[in-house]
Every structure is written in structure tokens, then in C-alpha cells.
Length: 140
Image (cartoon, rainbow, N blue to C red):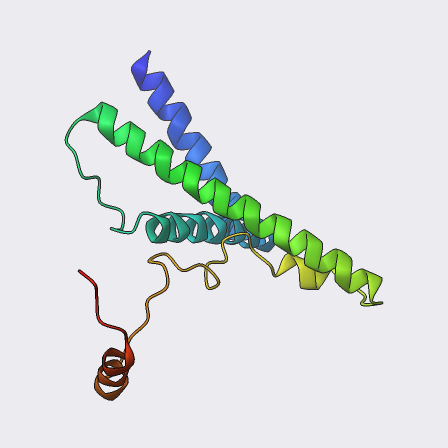
């Protein structure tokens, strides 16, 4: 019985490979879907701060970490889609014509507008010294 399943599996793989080789549309479709998955995985790595490393050997903790990262990623994507929807509505109200080609090039994985580590203010020597000199003394 196992041998019959292995043979059937080989035949199915062979038929798929022949179809893959002969159909350019199938190759394009597979490449496009693979790129989407890779983009999502890259986005998840970015969301995870430490990269794709699971920080525990405990399977339950690993599952929690994956679910939490997925939840945070979904919240960011939802926020991005909400913002884009509002922007597109404003653009259409102003008379812009939004084409399928333009919209197809967008992704919910945008992250350039997000400050993962908050906002920090860097003070250079002279500015910090001047600020300290003019600040009132700390009543302590």
C-alpha cells in the first residue's frame, strides 16, 4: 500500500513539474505568491524586534510568541489599511483617478512610518550645557 502511494506521489510531482515547465502563467503566479509570503515573513521578523529567533525551548511558550507576533503584525496591517483607505477616499474626493495598477503595488506591510523604539532626543554638548546652565536649580 505504501509503495502505491509513493508511486502516485511521484507521478503527481512529475505531472506538476511538466505543467510548471510548460506554463509561464503558472510560474508567474507561483513566484508572485511566494514573494507575498516572503514579504509577510520579513514583516514578522521586523515586528519581532529580535528577528526570527524563538527565545524558549518550551513548545507552549513558542506557540504563544508566534501568536503574539502574529497579533501585533495584524494590528499594524489593519492600521495601515485603515489609513490607506482614508487617504484614497480623500484623493478620490479631490478628483484623483486611482487605477488597479497603482493599488496593486501597495502592501499592508508598510513600516517606515512606525517608530518601534519610540522617539529619542539627542542633545549635543553645547546645547545640553546651555540648557543646564539656564535651568532652575532642582529643589531636591
